[in-house]
Length: 465
Image 1 (tube, rainbow, N blue to C red):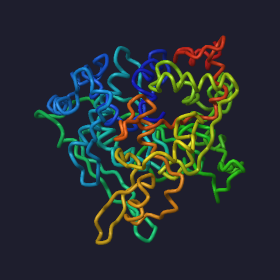
Image 2 (cartoon, one colour; image 1 turned 180 degrees about the vertical axis):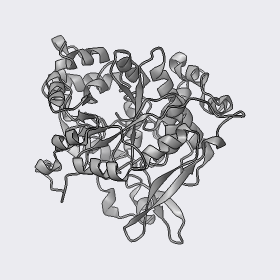
Image 3 (cartoon, rainbow, N blue to C red; image 1 turned 90 degrees about the vertical axis):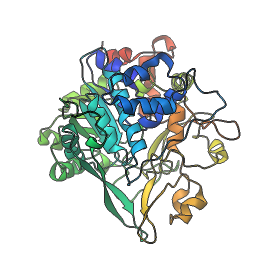
């Protein structure tokens, strides 16, 4: 769920009551660095640092980013070094530590498993991020928005502190693409005479939209698949594009049909555990999933709106209020995401869902989670994003048409959790909220019209209690 929405507090709350809490692995280097610059309220990040197995690395990050009492409101957050195919060490360290902190805190105080979710499209942080999560004892890795064939071998290698590689898609000037392997050697980061013992290989559950994609993963993945999250196009965040040519309805949203519905009988035949996702966040949805042979459901929207969520409180309450009033609306925007996948957007006044607000924003690419590698003239690797300034993108060989309607999800998602970048004109980066179509039904968790409920309330309702 975004960056920092499904945070350690939410994952811990869900895991404590016997379900699987999953933290978002998106942008954790940025999230943790900004928490430190905000003074680390509650001291939770620094407490996790005390348990990090490489203390000199942790101290370097603390010395660089921690501001006692927090930065001034008018000061911008420090810009972080960006990961690249050269494997720069500082951003890798931030990714390792950021993922360790989130998983460690989610696991703190109980013995139940905790998982982490990554977007395959955000490729360059995968290796150090997964290593950090393994150091903290993550039990499950979930990955969607792509075809993560390399992940099983990565999990095996990194759990043994062995070198691993991940294929990074690199665009060619002719419009095609090739892959270039990014390497990561854990022993370059280990402190002391020996790496930590006892890292467990977590279960790997790729997110798929069809039995065809599941079949590809089973045949071509670098190691075992332990189960599937079968996600339909009603889910929040990135959706798989419709199969075949994309057609839009009168509102400009992609049209999905029967070809886009996963055949659950095929998943039953595969014989691996699977869970359903995408508007199954109800007792009836859970029962349907169980009747179809699934192990259960993955729920995002309801948990994103509960009190343990990282979403800004005022934004949560406004979305719930709109839903209770029958005014909530979620649109599937085919252009918003720089990744090129359709992206679910909740309409919210003052956010980038408002075209006037979007048009006023000065384009900038300073977080670059979704930037794409491309081959420059002469063969060197460069980086670009269709949400960056149009002239810059075109100068890097990108097509101007690809910039139309693109929105900076990176800055928006960080703003969603209360850490917006301060801009030179004195304003802050704006939110862009993603929710599933289930937003309109959130009232099932709101007895007497209240706008506050807890993760335990969501679980209680889903279990029919």
